[in-house]
Image (cartoon, rainbow, N blue to C red; front, side, top):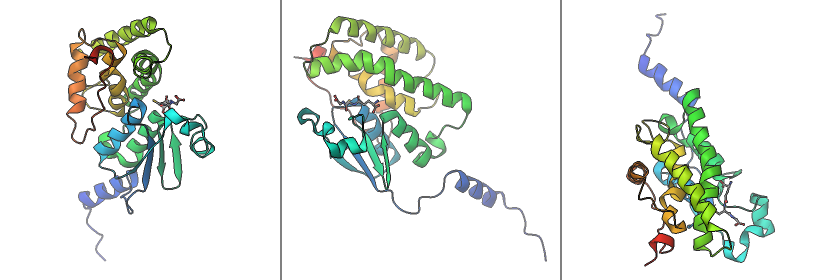
Length: 232
Ligand SMILES: N[C@@H](CCC(=O)N[C@@H](CS)C(=O)NCC(=O)O)C(=O)O
């Protein structure tokens, strides 16, 4: 019997399938979210960019729905977003981004190069740290009239934005030439910094990066609120 001729296309298809198994069933995804939450937005916009269908459940934070036993069973931290994919329940926006990228993102979003993956992680940490407790918290203080001392939050936000400005001086996205989940994670709270009285006027590279993220096919806009520097 003749040995079967090597077909590079078959080999490549098999190799790809072993890394990214084809979706045999459409996923059954539910996103528990708040539309004004930047943490929710990063996940929801990624679902749109990936073209994944999902059911959205609005969690009524104002009336404490996130402290009820049914929600705490999904996330004991009592925070949105929470994503359910079939039997899997995941909390924490950045963890969800990592999951979606590796489960559904294909080579476009699933970073395998160790150095690039580390750079992505570094900026996910910034999103969970400096961004959340700088422009994120300043916005929360203004939008939800929280009794927080705004001045140090504004100061902290400008330190971060200055750093981002320099980072984006010679690259289109935070980690290099390609968009990654790190850009999605850092977008909403930096783009809406003016809602917390943090001006973006001195950060042209940051504003150009926002525009690049917004131009991604499928990008879901994050609401603009008439508060802070946006107030009439
Ligand atoms: N580490 C969490 C933080 C999420 C978070 O802070 N969510 C806010 C809304 S933006 C929340 O649910 N807060 C509940 C509360 O205020 O008690 C993540 O990345 O998902």
